[in-house]
Length: 260
Length: 216
Image 1 (tube, each protein chain N blue to C red):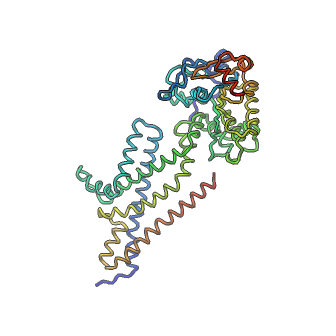
Image 2: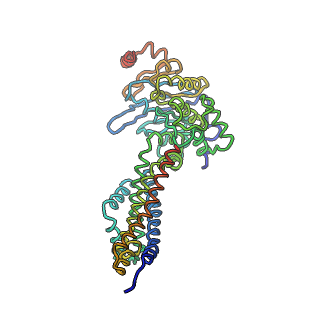
Image 3: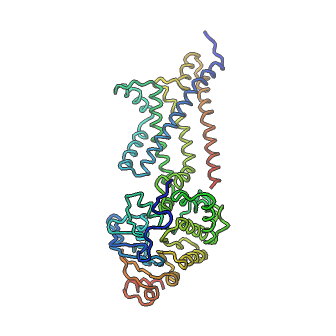
């Protein structure tokens, strides 16, 4: 499996001036339903952006457009300057190597051990195999606090542990941005903390994060910027302090007060 | 009148049973290969493949295997293709098996949660890698039982090839019954041989299924 030469080693044009994610006029319809109605967004390297809003406001869809799991009908989406081209498998492969995604339902590969879950994609896509790759996988698992689970099977782990493996798996591809789609929503309350702690550590280490979340306290503490989505648009955005304490639009005020 | 011992009957049936085994293997391997190709075309969303494969499956599932054998044996000569009973039987059974197998396997692939595809896609795996390393191994696990179950159907289905004159176990049984005037003994032996072919396959399928489900 030949690795894409453009994505091995240093990423192209990763200067500070260039945003990691650039979105312009993004529109997405499911049949008659327009879920995204013109999204403009730039995410800078190292920025932590939280997406909040009611279910159906389009926040998950927006996230899923960024790595091409959904195909937008209109607009321009770039990751590190690389255009999203859903019909071009080569381009998608290059883009997806720079975009990690973590799902609500973990989606670990149940037929592979934890270690193999982490090693699979780097081995296939980047040709990283052998002892060095193993060491790196162990390091990543140690980073999420699961150094001893290398040979475990996913179904032997708790939900929180599985989600942390999913984070290690995404990090193994060395992404420029990590998309987190309600990653604690499927967890028992007592397991939420361990996952959020890992994400918070990533944020502190300078990882670019885009996360859809219902954990408002967490968003407030960790995010640099909060986007409130409503009816397929970014309705209001700003630093968490400002957004949570002085919401300007009635929709956001209502959303926040409904949370209690 | 010639006397036939039981051994004469069994020996001749065993010789003919080789052709039942050979025909089953050809149908299964050929049907498996064609079925896999159709599966990849369908799951990989090749343009137009979904409709064509669905039509193909409906065609073979909606007509009796007997008619498919007749059409292959009597139809191809009309098109100027001379065909032996052996080739006609192998061809018809291969197409028949491919239609059923591709449908069985599609169900198994569709039983894999969408999140598995999405996780594999997010990790930049190509379609081939997704199939081979993520979806395939999981689908294989649930495919074992129905696939081997269908293999048993194919073994028994080869009996129909006797009607176009292909001498396999059933046809040999008919001929021997006519010669020995002992139809009950002969057909009992024939049935026993089908059972001895099919039972180990079913038993193997159960064992395989248990092992694969323990391995997860």
